[in-house]
Length: 174
Image (cartoon, rainbow, N blue to C red; front, side, top):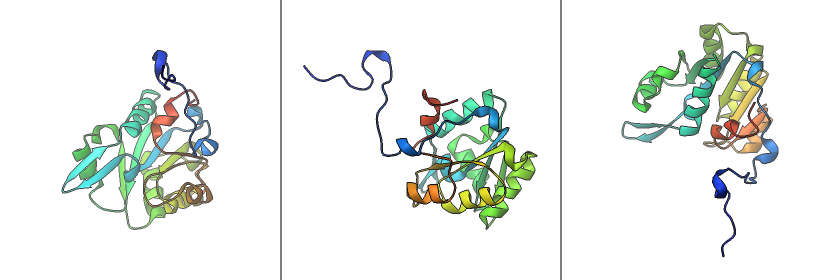
């Protein structure tokens, strides 16, 4: 007889991963708006194919049910088009773009009319986490997706680090 799997019995059992020590509880009462880097919510597969990341979309949906405003930042001018292609533009309140991470974060904070201390930034790049911290954002989430290693995200100021935002919906989520 085989050993029971993590999903046997209709309930999820925790799986230990290398990111577990880097994941912290996120208190939804600490923020009014969430700012996501484009690559934290959608994957560009090339040739005009952009797909939403299901865990990120699920967390955004949870935040919207809680009354949180949502922003997306991207270096290119085509962020709105990418969100449309991914089918998630209707979940986003503002899109801020610009060549510098600091400009993008500041622009999203201004457009969302939220104080940095009342925002959370979710990013896969260390420079966006650095920019968020420099802008006064205290709550930052690093998502391991792309070139930055978990340690780089931690050094850039990520309060918590996840492989997928779906992890924030589990038993450890606020």
